[in-house]
Image (cartoon, rainbow, N blue to C red; front, side, top):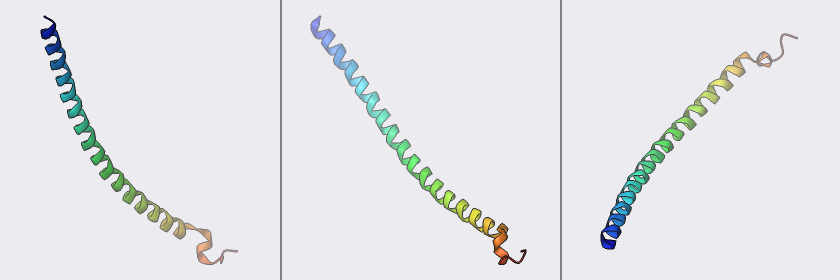
Length: 69
């Protein structure tokens, strides 16, 4: 009886470890995807910053050398 209980507990432990291993694998995959997404966001942010600076320079009142004053 005690042996059966021990075997049952070891079986539950094995199942829990298998589930945890699967979860860790999924987490690793998600972190890889997150790294890809963060790299894409960095590129997009750089592009948007460049566009913003270009538009700001075009709309800046000082862009004409102060000819309005």
